[in-house]
Amino acid sequence: MSIPSPPSSSNPLNLVDVRERLNAEAKKLGFSGLRVSMPDLSKAKLDLQKWLKAGHHGEMKWFERSVELRTNPQQLVPGTVRVISVTLPYSAENGAPAKQILKDKERAYISRYALGRDYHKVMRHRLAKLARTLSILSGTPPGRVFCDSAPVMEVEIASQSGLGWRGKHTLLLNRTEGSWFFLGEMYTTIPLPADPPSTQHCGTCSACMDACPTGAIFAPYQVDARKCIAYLTIEHPGSIPETLRPMMGNRIYGCDDCQLFCPWNKDPEPQTCPEDFANRENLDSGHLLKFFNWSEAEFNARLAGSPIRRIGYQRWIRNIAVAIGNGPKNEFTLQALRSALMKHSDPMVLEHVEWALQRLQKAS
Image (cartoon, rainbow, N blue to C red; front, side):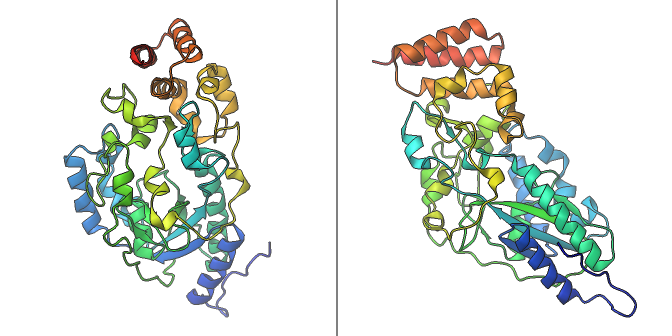
């Protein structure tokens, strides 16, 4: 990679040129989009406070502690005058077809973003390179980069930058990629030319709301995390409410239904996805019993570098037990559940295993 020349007194900073060269570098790094904004988060702050007051964040208490930092970029990173937002694509059909696996109740469904390497690491590594490029071009210290690693309202900021618009499922959408991408940000002191915000293109469509298995998207742009399968299988630390367990089907880590049935995701333009996100360990279509029989050592070894590993072994087994309970009754599933009762000692795990066993035993 050629090293750009820093500005000098005889060659003053040209912000338009810096922006163009930054765009070119972003493309080389695999980002599918880059936009710049200085967002106004005043309305987003009011919406966040209303969401928190209603308790829709569940056990995610960190939202309560970070309202001011989340809604004020200058408070999170003093001196910030612009936020650079980027998209990094991944594929909905990374491995076995998603909708096909959802119908096969003996196989595990894992959200398609989590089939490969942890996107947090991939995004931050590439953003750090982009930040170094901007630092050299501008002659200033590198900006701070984020990817789900700090209190940043990434979807709201990205929509104000023109990368897309907020869909009724609250995710970012754009015309070329639908919603199959990760978001990352760089807070910078460089007053780069800002981009205009996006316009809305969801119209009267309610496909994402209709597709939600638990009704978590209870109104346009409103999600009750306490009912969201992604929250229940990843962020929720304890017992999954029994009323919601049957609705989870075979989803053991995350849920993509609101994306899979979104018209904007029907025929996205082909994107070059990083090899880091390639399917591993047969996570795209693995048999539930195979994953259920992993020991804790196997879980940690096989999922090293995966975003799944952060939920821990107990939640992994908890989630799979629910999925088995929602699947077909046969001698193999019954035996696996009975063996698990002898193998595990964690009360939360045992509760869900017992629930699954009782559910299958009652099945005709």
